[in-house]
Length: 328
Image (cartoon, rainbow, N blue to C red; front, side):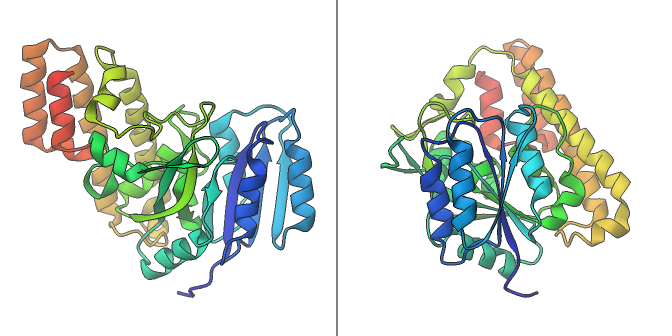
């Protein structure tokens, strides 16, 4: 495999004039510059379009700016940007971050060094709205809170996600599940055992209180398990798990529709049969876990223990998810 591949950045914008110039400048400052930037704007009423048009005229790489005729919303807009990207590797970007100069080169090398990897996610430094680093990374905060999981299973940060074009065979079109475009592509890659986490910090992750992504902590303080569990204490979380169950059902449908021959061209680590079994088992585990939320303490303990003995918690965060179900 050639070490040089066509790299496309897929970004969405919406009234991003305040922070957008810094992000665009960071694309231009890459030691390995992108081959293409695709931006889908969702009806900005500030100077976002003017900033993008000016950048497109001066950038040393192709820039495609698309103005949506109607507001699509965050998830559908990213789906559109992804569908228009033409690169061998597609890198997702938010409008308000700043990429470090080596991001593209490090990610490109990760794909070249790991042919069976279809998706790469990198670590990010959490900053305040002025891009002043908090000194805490997302991976560090996830580890502290118990969200990271085996091989970074819980990390689905879209703005730090890149994937091979082959993954679009299954990922596109991104379904209207209100599940998140990033969670969707990560679940796909995880089912295929084709994710790689790069622990190196490759970008600044700006938190300014109006981010489209809903992150459980902002880096101002060290995270703890209570940071994540307290907001959901006593709440019925089954609607969240129903979305995940529907996602696994659709992944299974798409795998079966794709068939073993086309699947083989993806280059995934898991075989076709292994991937189907993994998706079906994960869906069944989600359905069984949803029953936990409707039980009293005794019933919850009994059901959680049965899930543990079946090995269902490997589809979540392992023993951490088991403990959460016991005390929820």
